[in-house]
Length: 390
Image 1: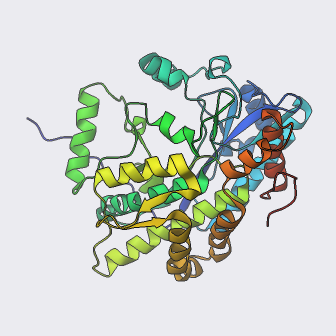
Image 2: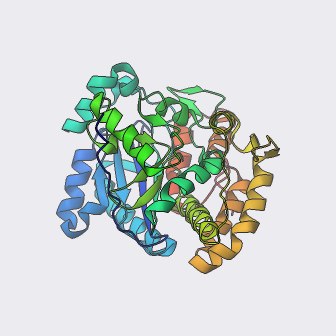
């Protein structure tokens, strides 16, 4: 059998960032999703064409994605996303369309959503059919630059020990088709139904990863490496690790807190490799159990935090993690953004805030959507009465 084709890794500056934030387009009056991404993208291009690469289309016509350039800091990434968000909101103002972020829409029906007319999306739907059509879900992704290809797999495997932590903090999809699912992140369990989505395999050597990719191509499972849609994945073309496990969140403040946490974790693991240390690693079944617990219980999850099956409440684990990463954040210049992770612990993750709104007498899904839209517009975490929680 011939050796698998080599997959070169592009050079990338250490701990640089790229962030992607998928936003829902919703009707200002009904709260329903609006199938108007094409019109929004055209308006953005017409208004300021030089910036249009920062706003792109996605699988569904109810979605636009904000994409940063390569950023040297969390602050730079925030400014990039804010500029793109401002352009989108300016474009949608006359359309009676609002924008917000969440892992799922509280009550829209998947069969009513229109798929974007693009070859790669048509191929995806043709292959995955019913499950593919169900993917009315929204996430955020953080790329972190890795300066040495030899570090990519060890850091990817180490990040899996914190994947459930990231999911619990970002969980924002308690509803599906108008039903309260009793899950904090229904999105994450839906998404893993696709054949190359969900948790990644853990490889010890780059050659093993290359062999896997070659097998997927040979079997026709994928046509390009980008179709491997793992929760955490190497992106050789960019020289990055991409963390994709998080739900989309309603506020830019939360998005940047998550970005800071991911950047600090990667930098911490990278520094430990430089010092000759081994990195933490869990068995695949521990990683899978943790993901399910985070998806089900969110901020109330009790997570496995050691290879010996030691367990800890996620909020206790997060506070210890923040203390450990504080010097890293100072070095990277993202201490303020990392501190906002504690705010999520105190105020509640988005799924908790959504459920609190729905619990008010007479409330329905439209109230939840209005709450999400207001949080996005004000960039503040709000209680069910609209009062700021920060």
